[in-house]
Image 1 (spheres, rainbow over the protein chains, first blue to last red):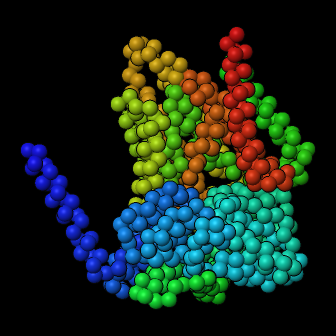
Image 2: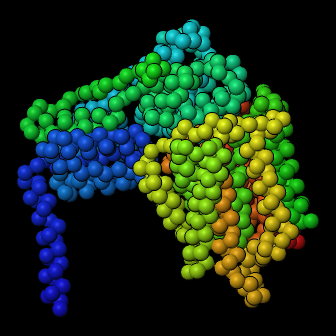
Length: 310
Length: 315
C-alpha cells in the first residue's frame, strides 16, 4: 500500500516535471512579473504580452501579477519562484523601486537575464547592491510635462493650476509630479496647491471639490492619472464650472468620451499594451546572445488631445 | 435617555470641530462647501449605517469595500445594457446591485452564525471573494457611460442639499426606527449585550445575525448605486479600505466595538466628524500626511473618551 502510494506520487512528479523540462529544452522561458492586474493599464499590458507570445511563438511566457498596487510580497515570491524554476529571463515592472533590488540581484547572480520596465529601480539602491541593470520604460516626467505644457498653452502665462498627485512614495507618481512642475515653471503658471488622491476616482472627486472651495479661482488641473481626472471632471460638472481645464495621464478607455466632449483637454498615452512585449523582445535578444542593455531605453509616449479622438 | 446623552456628547464634539474650522479656515461655512461635505460623507454614511447593525450584535464586516465594488460592477453592467429605457435600466440595476449586496451579506451572516465562526474571519474571506468576483465578471475593466439623467441625479441638489445625502438621511431615519422602536431592533442590542440571555429567552440567534449582515449588504448595494450616480463609473477596484472608514464612523459615533451599545444617530455624527475633518483640514492648508495622522489621532481619542463615558454612565 505504502509502495503504491510512493509510486503514484513519483508518477505524478514525473508527469508534471517532464513537460516543463521538455519545453525548456526547445524554447526560452520568460517570467513576466506585473503589477496589479486589477488595473486596466497592466491588464492591457498583460494581454499585449500574451498576444505577443502567441505571435512570436519562439518563447514560453509565464506571467504573475499582484493583488493590488502595494502588494510587494507576491512580487517578491514571484521572482523567487522564477529563480527556482530556472527561467531564462525575468521581465519585471517593480512594485517598489527599492524593495525589488535585492531579489533581482539574486536573479542576475543566478545567470538570469533581467529586464526592468515600466518603473525604474532606484539608482542608489542599485549601486548599493552592486546591481547594474538597464531600464526599459517611458519617461513619466517627460510625459507629464507634455500634458502640463498642453494645459499651459491653453491657459497662458499666470494661469492658476493645482496638481492631483498619485500615491506618495510611488516612483511614477513622483516623476509625474516633477513633470507637471517642469511645465508650470516653463509656462510661468501659478501653482496654488498640490495634493494626493491615491490614484482614486472617488478620493480625487472629494479632494478636488474641497480644493476648489479653497481656491475658487483655479483655472487648470493636472491629474497624475485618468481615474483621478474622471473624479475631478465630475466635481466640475457638479459645481457647474465648465471654465476649468483638466489634463490626465494613461489614456484609458473611460476618458475617451470626455476627450470627445472636450471635458478633458489632454492625456498621455504610454502605449502600455506594447510596453511589456517590447521589454520581452529586448530580454530575448540578450538571451540569444545579443549585447547587454544599458542605461535607459526610452519607450514611446504621446500626447492625446480632443483632436485625436474626433 | 442615556443614549441621548451619549449622542449629545458626540454632537458637541462635532459642533466644536465645526466652530474651529469656521474660525480658522476660509470658505468653510460657505453654502457650496457645506454641500460638498454632505456629498463627500454620503457613501461612507450609508456603509456605516449597515456597519452599525453588524457592530451592535458584536460582529464586524470587513467586506463592505469589496462588496461595494462587486455591487457596482453588477449594477453598472445592467445600467449599460443597450435598448433599456432609463427607468428600466436604473430600476433593474438597483435591484441587481442591492440583490448582490444582500446575497453577500446573507452569506456573511449565515456562515458565521451556522458554524459559530467569528465574523472577522468570515468577512475577511468575503473581502477576497467579492473583490475576486468583481474582477472576474468585468475582466478587470472599468464600466462607464451611464444614462445622462442617472448621472445628473448624482449631483442633484435641493436647496443646496445633495439628493444623495437626503437618501442617506432617510436611511438613517429608517435604521433609527428599526433599532430603537421595534422588537427586532431591541433584540439586536440584546444579542450584543448578552447572547446567551437572548437565546435562553427562546429567540433564534441565527435569524437575527443573518438579518444584521444582510441589512449591511443591502446598504452596500444602495451605496454602490450612489457611487455610480456620483462618479459615472463602476470599476472593480473601487472601495479599497472603505470598510475601515465605515468602522471609524461607527466607533467615533460612540457604538461599542463589543456590541450592545450605540446608535445610528451617533454613526451619523461620526460620519460627519470624519467628513468635516477631511474637508476642513484641506481648507486649513494642512499637508496630506498630517491630515492622515490627525484622522488617526481622532479615532483613538474617540475610543478613549468612550471608555470614560462608559465608566460615568455605569456609575
